[in-house]
Image 1 (tube, rainbow, N blue to C red):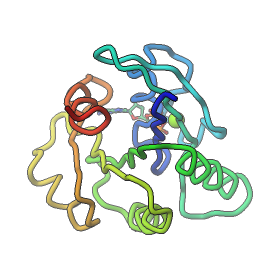
Image 2 (cartoon, rainbow, N blue to C red; image 1 turned 45 degrees about the horizontal axis):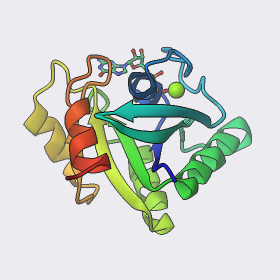
Image 3 (cartoon, helix red, strand yellow; image 1 turned 45 degrees about the vertical axis):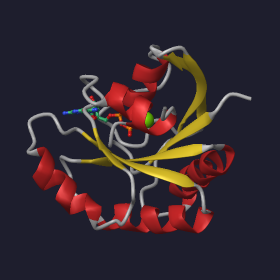
Image 4 (cartoon, helix red, strand yellow; image 1 turned 120 degrees about the vertical axis):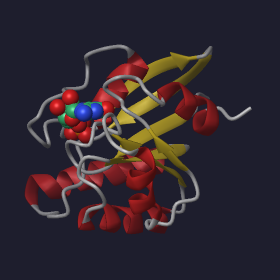
Length: 162
Ligand code: GDP
Ligand code: MG
């Protein structure tokens, strides 16, 4: 059985960008329009000779009715299917109330969750991370998915630790 990694978080934090980087495809829709990927999207990835399955999700908006509710449900379904969940947040936006609510939902699932702070390009990494440590996750990574920065380390430290 291949390990399964789920990408969850608010819309527009860079989940699909990271998915595309992992799978090296343009399968996941990447756009400035939040909420474009509404269903779960599965991809195969191989990094450093390690194959795994990755699931992209539409995002959790915090206003969970209608389409938003379905997206949140899909996200939590992906979490339940996964071995490791990468909870993606945006350094550009800083910590938001919706991030806090997602963190709470994830904790109630009792799964292995790793916090990934994306879009750290051009930001002061230490300042940005300090903000997010308040969420209380043991394991935190800083990346710039659009540029590949920190992504290799994320794989080595979190997904396939030696
Ligand atoms: P999703 O809704 O979480 O899947 O987010 P997307 O992957 O569609 O990305 C949303 C926007 O953020 C797009 O305009 C991306 O180009 C941009 N983005 C993604 N990763 C980064 C990053 O590392 N740095 C910056 N500055 N922008 C990024
Ligand atoms: Mg997306």
